[in-house]
Structure formats: structure tokens, C-alpha cells
Length: 199
Image (cartoon, rainbow, N blue to C red; front, side, top):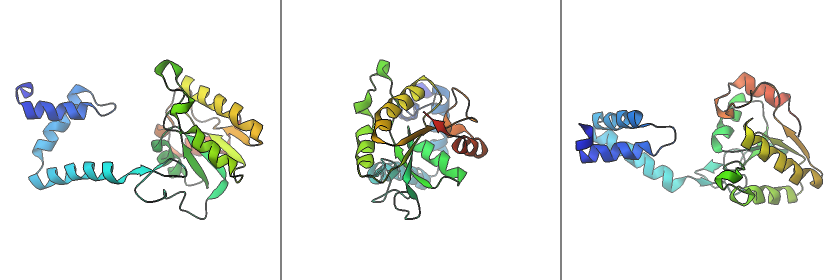
């Protein structure tokens, strides 16, 4: 029935473009929008437009922000000698929940995956090297997922950064192979952070 209502089908199709959203979930979301008041629907639409217009990459760490610098780079109390390299902004949010990590971050916006056309030039690696060249960074913690692409990225970064005199470590036990870091609980992340090892 919904397929014959063109605007509903179109709305469901748009929700279906979101990562991890299947056809049934997309249709449920579309019906949820229909259940909203006109005011709530307008606010929902405006929130999407505002997010797209206001959120950009932090010029220092490449994290998402709606200010000049992200909240971490803007915090004078953070240890700028330690940088935790992550694949995406969601991992920064997960790491921050631990409340024990006092360093800064660098967001790659992906991991190496040559089969999918994701090569080093497609990631924010040159921006990381520019930060390293400023001379303040002493340790890089590679916090990519414990899967093939994450491990490949970690090894690539280690080979690139270690000759520059940096300590390059990797999150250790606590995060099982194949697990996305963003889904790990705070205790697991804290153990992994404290037990990091050289790459």
C-alpha cells in the first residue's frame, strides 16, 4: 500500500539511504514522521538542514564540530603530546565516555581498504603528518577497529610514524577481533586504553 503513496515511498527511500537502515526500518521511520505534528516535522527537517550547514571538520584534528575548533582541541587542559588516531567521529564519542583519556584525537575518516579504493590519499593522513611535524606530539595511539582494514591501517601508520621518533601504540586487550570500537562499553575501552602496546 505504502508503495502507491508516492511521497511516503520517497520519504522511506530517503531514510533507506542512511547507513544500517533496511527497507522495513526505513518505512517505520517514514510512518513515524507522518505521526508528527506539522511543527515537529518542520523542526525535524530544520535540524537536518542545520546539521548539514553548521557541522564541519575541525581544522586541527578533523573531528566534527559546529564551532571554530572541536571541544577537545579547544580544551587547554588536554595533553597535546598524545594523539589517539581513530577512523571516525563516532569513535571519539565512545572514547570520551571513558573520561580517563586526557590526550587529543585525529580522525582519519575511514580506514585503508585498497579493494574498495580507499588508499592513504583518501584519508586524513597528511593532516596528521602536518601535526606531527609541529613537534609537540610524542605518542600516537592507533585506535582503529580490530579487523583486517583496521589492522592494515595501524601497521601502515606505524611504518610511517615510527621513523619520525614517535612512540606508536595500539589499543590492547579488552576489544575482541571484529568488534567496532564505538560499540564497546566504557570499562572495556578503559582496559584497552591502559593496556595499549607498541605496534
